[in-house]
Length: 363
Image (spheres, rainbow, N blue to C red):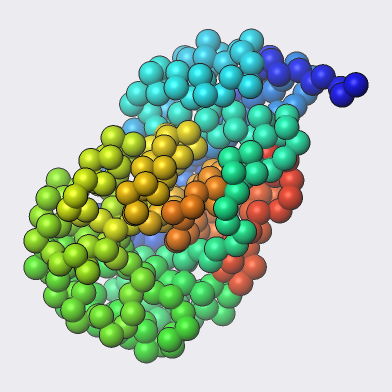
């Protein structure tokens, strides 16, 4: 007879922690230098545990760290204590209802649930979700720089570390953006992937001009070129350009995914971030919509613990439409509360064969 492990959650805990950054960076609308994450810990009656983390981004989702922290302190125990981990879908649906305005808080709980359940089954989470992919390169992001030299020296550094794809933040000044893109391609040669993120900084006319003048540099994709309130203006841009454009700030939840999947499709790529949609459960719903609609997937992040970066990787590898990873959010952290998780070799991300997320609390 198999040993019957307990499936009942007896202990729940949530807390916040600052993980600090070794390298502050600048994007189109702010400079970031410290990183608070919210953490969730679940444990069953016989000591099996799961961990989750979330990274609230008030400038994207309107969720503050205080709100995430408070809602978990208030509701986590009622939601999960004494509950059965195998009822994961009910729990994930209940999270949507009980914590509607705090996606990073939902995400932390959702990840912890997935971690503990896959550990219960003694398989990696990716296999529980239905693995499709084995290894995909991640991009390494370069923030907006004051000088070309500064940008190029950071590119050199990332290439020397083994990264095969660079993501360049653009969107402040189109002429400069074209120059930076040209100089970057010249510096890294033809074998390195380049993608750009305009962080809502362009108009349709600027996007068209940028795309035309950088076409010869073989850009993989252009992320969120227009302001999220101006999605419909993407229809003024040619279908060829739209096909390489990724929705980021415009895409939060499955409802957005469904709306953006209508014809004419305004974006050929969706950037799924767990902190926007609130966990692996809604991320998989978005991924199913994309797969059905013939839209490719990119998986992005904020500055996040290894926990949620690894969770994003597990669900990304379980989705047929996944093409791009931008999961570099834990590389510049000064510290973390776990070890293990994903493997990164020469920019290529893989998942070791460990139960659940494969992360261990440092404790």
